Length: 350
Image (cartoon, rainbow, N blue to C red):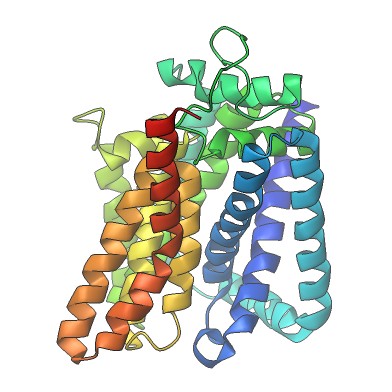
């Protein structure tokens, strides 16, 4: 029964991500009209994370019930899905035809990479890795479910907290885990160790695939080789506990691992697309990426700002347009706001 629930949950996550991606792409059709199905899945997933960050932070500080956050977020996603399905029927049908045509086509050059990716997913889901950080991250999700509160109880001891944990309260990724667990009626530990590896390892390689398409335009053989080499590099990347490969293949269910393996590479992809488009359209995606990064980890708040800021400075110099730097600065507003709140909480001890 748990296996069926887990499979259903994975399908639901990717379906909602795709439909949300279709909605976001339809908002800026001037540039994004030709984006493929996997791009929409990636964009939609990051968009859902950004929406959860926007909704959850005010409710956490208002000490609202977790159930209120859950139903509000679920309601927003339901409205987006229904609206997107009815508004973008033609685009969805076109993507289905595109998927069918690609499945029939001879895409043998991706087969080696897909086999390695499936192997990596199987190993992490079938042979559970025990990580000490689960004592906080997974326990926080469990505490959220059991107490119907958010960051009000110590996940180690169960005692009522005197103040918000400033290192974690602005990055409520465990609360998202609790919401997914509540939706599926699967314990957070099972969701973290079996469902999230499937979702986030796949998401990470979708981003890498999109990078290969950008680097090797219309050269599918080179794209397949690039993706295969990346899978092999990750297989042999456990030379330190701090590498992105370690976070991807050992503890991908933690927010900081999602940040390193999925969100920051996606933000870099958005930056490169923005550069190619002279920052005319895709700079808006950087706002979504910045919000998603802040959801995953407190480090994501500053790292996303640094990445976008560096690209903005370089773009302003290269294109001799100060407006690029201003637009990139506007994209970093979520990071600036959250950084200010972080310092205020740390100094005042709220």
